[in-house]
Image (cartoon, rainbow, N blue to C red; front, side, top):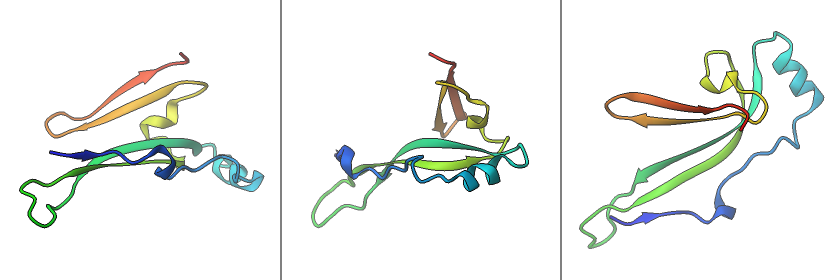
Length: 101
């Protein structure tokens, strides 16, 4: 199976540069929402092309500015802490947290 990895410059990436004071005020006004830059990646299976016997796979990746609520596992992070969550078919989501490395 062939897996295609996109070049880094083709991965969509948000930034905090465009966040306004009003955006921050709106997110934090009720004390329940936080902005976080969230990186995500997944592998998608592509249909076989022409005479190929096997489907190929491709990485889908992005970094997106998201407004999180307290029920999101990323909500509790602060400072330089990070969290990796793996989606599994048998065990469901598995998370690993690194606190202020």
